[in-house]
Amino acid sequence: MSTFLIIMHVIVSIALIMIVLLQTGKGADMGAAFGGGSSQTLFGSSGASTFLGKATTVAAVIFMLTSLVLAYRSGLTTGDSIMADKKAPIEQQAAPTAPAMPAAPDQSAQPAAETVPPLQPAQAGKSAKQ
Image (cartoon, rainbow, N blue to C red; front, side, top):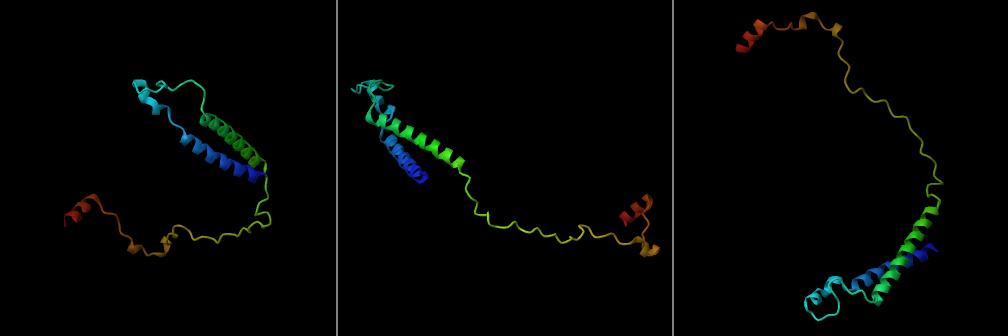
């Protein structure tokens, strides 16, 4: 049933496109308003509608109905999943990661002679000039 509706929907949509493209626009008879000799006025005639106008209306109604039916039918289907028979993946424990920053070296293991005392302000100026 849905295959038939889809085929009908596609055929009606192509027919609707073709019917609309075959029609002349209202601006096509613009010269008639300025003495072109045509019976239509500037904004189109309000007379009886043409065959293409009626065909456009019928095709548009069928297009809208098929659209609504297809949308309704697609909402109703629960459908079986292709993943119904598959087992859930086994979660694996992540390996422990290394720390982002290396651990600070042990300060007590270094001899005191290697530490450099901070420069005094008077000494800082002298060392910068040298």
